[in-house]
Length: 174
Image (cartoon, rainbow, N blue to C red; front, side, top):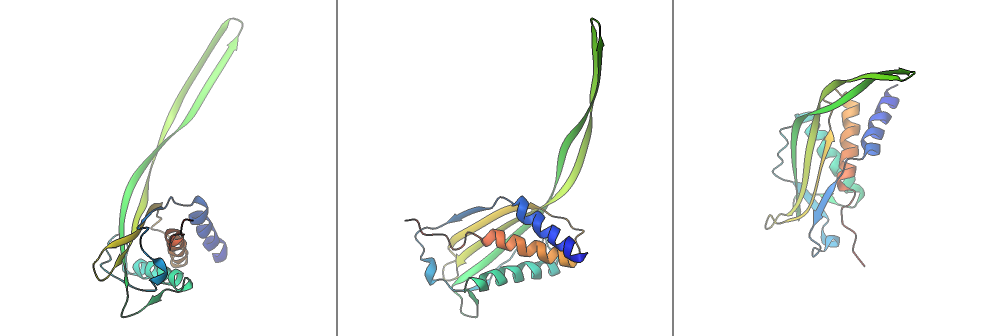
């Protein structure tokens, strides 16, 4: 049963695919960047356990890309998060109509439905540690369910890290 729930969370994050906005410096030689550390993270929107899950997911992704976490890094990773409530408005329409002969009539109405959802806004900055110059950035906003269990949260942050870093390093244009 847990597998189904975890699979559903992964599918929901991946399938809905949050829109990821990426910006980068095309002059940087990304092939020479292989070591990193985390710096000045502003993740007040996440509790300490979620922060650990998210940074572990980022490290796991970067390790697969042959990047190394070490004491003499070239790249600093800055993680910024914000949690915001947003109301969504929709309406269910109801209608009744009738007609006969030469007389037609109808009655319709709408029932407003308002829901408040939590959105996690994430910005991932990559900077050179020697001068704090930004050279790559990814931002996104995703629906965040604060009632997820630990397994669901871990899968959520893995999928989010994979989505954020999918376009890093940028492909060279030919």
